[in-house]
Image 1 (cartoon, rainbow, N blue to C red):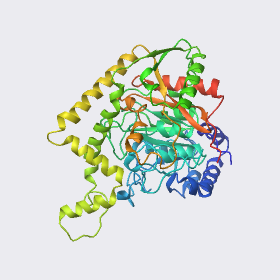
Image 2 (cartoon, helix red, strand yellow):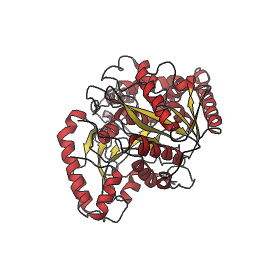
Image 3 (cartoon, rainbow, N blue to C red):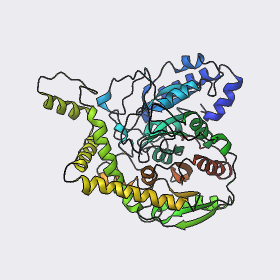
Image 4 (cartoon, rainbow, N blue to C red):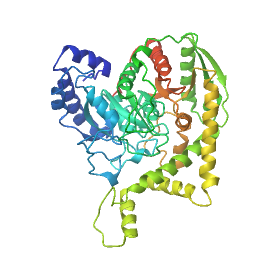
Length: 476
């Protein structure tokens, strides 16, 4: 089966009223056939083909099936955030991003696997088992939107929604050879997204082409009165940005993102992509941005602190497992959280609680917030001179399953390239630039706040003139 891109499917569905239903049926068959090896879906909507048939066909997406990360609420479909503590939870409502896709004619094909509560960079922290990379099933697909990246790369879904806190859309996009966009903070409503770190969480699309990203963003972007942090800024014409010209643009490579710790193979491919961008008429400089080296520590303190607060609600009384237990409230609470949360979630809750505790609040949490402000200010200053900043998306190709789990610090270091955009609330896009030893590598472009059009323009020119087309399916 040759799975089309979302845009190609839209064109087919316009002229063939039965196309969407048939495509949904074929995708469901492909999921049943190959996803046992990948584990990219936690739940599958077996009614997707029937729902595609009932689409009016007049909406922009014509009843086409889309996959959704399991931390994004879907009415009537189990939503677990990859955690045992939410096993069996069926939301009574859709997240705003999902309801906008459905209003545009999309059908939810299923919920994709993920690191529990979005905590992880490899896709191995799910209560439902690890996701495998379709390019090499002995390797991870990246996290936390691991299932979304793997499903799109394997041709099990036309496109997917992910959610990015410290790089959770861009990381799996890089490791699976797909395109992944983290929009500006507030550009897409977070209503219905199960929170990890609320000041950085952001829903974004993963797809096989820039045009698919632009189409998805055009539908899900915009102010939402149900999310007080969503921006009232007008939604721009993202599809028009695909036809833009990059000649004469000034962009910069940040020296701190291409030095120590970057795999030599990734470095060679990255600089080859930078040369290709220069060949499109773009002026490329190298600059230094202060405080980036401290961004990783700042992120893990702030994100863990917010996680410890957000996850306090899962106590078996308000949310979560409700086991029968005859002890007092304290022992009941401990049992629910002990059984319901995985190891990585427990570690981050304890780190966050410690950072917020009396005596350490100023030394850890307040200091981390100050560093976050400095990183944001430095990036803003750099982007006042340059249209975009470029870096590798991930410092290495995808590691083997289990390679990073015994060394948490090494796993946290994998986020070093993606975290600065998250701290500053800026948009960033991962572009596939090729493979090393058969494993995908991505280039990250980071832009000014609400300037998603520039990211899409550069990505489209690179896709059209260097890649010569959409990202290929993984050779399953």
